[in-house]
Each structure stands twice: as C-alpha cells, then as structure tokens.
Length: 204
Image (cartoon, rainbow, N blue to C red; front, side):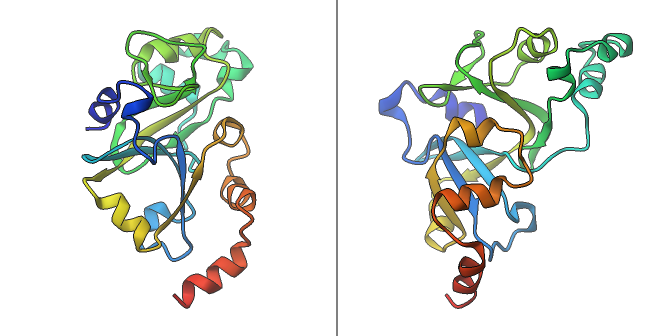
C-alpha cells in the first residue's frame, strides 16, 4: 500500500494536502506507539496516507544492518566512512517493520526513487544503501524501518479529533541529527508551548 500511494502521484497536481507535512502527535495521543511522534507524510490521497516517524531511533546500527542484508561483510563494515557509520536507523512506524525506507534529497535518484515533493524523494531498494555505504549517497538522507499507514479518511478523522497537529516540513528539521529534541523544536516553530498545550488538551 505504501509505495502504491506514492506511485499514484504523477506530479504536483496529484499531491494530497498533507503531502510534505509534519504530523505532530498531541499530548493526549491514545496510541503509545505514537507518543511524542513526529511523522513526515510521504503520500496522502482519498485512498489513505503513508508516512515515516522521524524521531524514534532503532537500536540497530547502520553497519550491522548492512552486514545483515549481505551488502557488506564485517571487515568492510568496520572500514565504512564516518558519515555512514553514524547514519541513524529510525523506527518509521508499526507497519512492515522488516522493510527499509530512505527519505533523501533529490540529488540522488535511481529508477525506483519516487518523488515526495519538489526536493524530497523516497527510495526503498538496497541501491541507495550501497551508495550511502560507499560515500556516493544523497547530500541528506534518513532511513527508517517500517512505516505508518492510514486507510481512507482515517487520518483526517484523527486530525479532526485533535490527535495530531500539522505543519509544513522543512529539510533542516527533517534531516538534522538532533532527534531527541525534534518534537519540542517543531512545536516551538509553531509558537506552541508544550506545557500550555498539555493543559489545553486535558480540558478539551
């Protein structure tokens, strides 16, 4: 479903109103899996939505993942460039957790890369992992295992029930490595004080 939603987008005219937006979990979020989550929406249409949580880290290290996938052996993994060694693997969501997705700037594209916005693409094949491990990858990238998905009308209902806030995504907040503070920083860009938001949410 995830990639199908992306493939249906034929250009800017096909984009849903939530594409290339951050989805920010409200303090009253009932689903613990999305507590304090920031999700980047990759595809949104009448048929549903697909996105990646960008502020939850996997315990799996990128070099170990490359060895598991057979892309490198253990000796090659030790010699990885520092940028690849430090590449953080994130938890993209509860769906299809064995599958990897890489969000990246459009300076890198292969046949399987799908445009999300004018500047951001998503690639879900091992080509990009090989490129990153060899230092030939995109300027900015983030990798997640699994994704977050919603059926037709489901996400719109959750937003209407004050489960989520939305705001336009920026490359800086999408790709920077300050994962622990991302939730608070994105709220701050909206001029929202979390303490006040918590109180307001409690008295809705």
